Image 1 (cartoon, one colour):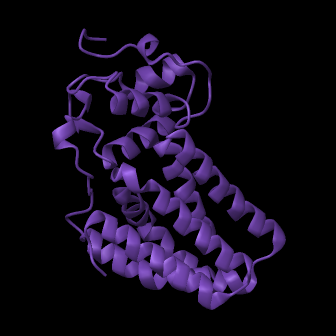
Image 2 (cartoon, one colour):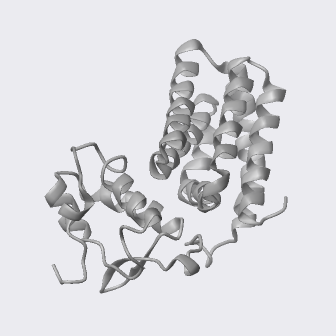
Amino acid sequence: MTSDAVSLSELELADRTPVPRGIVDHIQRLILKGGLKAGQRLPSQRELAEQLGVSRPSVREALTVLETMGLVTVRVGSGVFVAKADARRPLWRYSDRCTPADVYEARLGLEGYAARLAAARIDKPAEERLRRCTDAMRTAFEAGDVISLAVNDTEFHDMIFELSGNPVLAAMYRPVREMLVESQRLPMAQFDRLNETVSEHEAILEGIASQDPDAAESAMQSHIRSAAGRFGVSL
């Protein structure tokens, strides 16, 4: 490891909690609180995985979230570096295919209708699964754990398509899932507005749990419009 890379001992990891709630929770806190300085190189994915006993795909996913939110930058051939505070911008990886606005527009239709179907077909075990997601999002928000919030956000949206009970709708979702997930994370760079994200998911849950398709669809579409707005896109 070169001299400009932060060592794992500096991260003060206290346990083996799975990525991202372990490794990246510490990294994001150190970045946001100044413990990791702008321009400092992080350990490689291999080093993080080996020294912490976790999988490289888990490390890769966690670093992807940090990069999406503009906290780190990836330099091909050099590594992952802490971004300068005045240069932190959400990253959109699909500019050669579409814009974030294109994705938010598509989500209005796809996810709004998926939520409507889920409300008509929800059962108690499925409701409890969704509620665990929103509870975890609320806990993550209160703990300042943006990464865990993002992971549970993704799980919540994945589950909506599953609970819609429509295999064609689910098949339409799978090829574009990564773009949709990225669009979920873009607004999270607005750290002071994360409570809005959590509250919006709780409203979607209540619409679905009450088996009210109109309320569920409306809450989902309201969330997507608000998320787009937090990123600067007007729908």
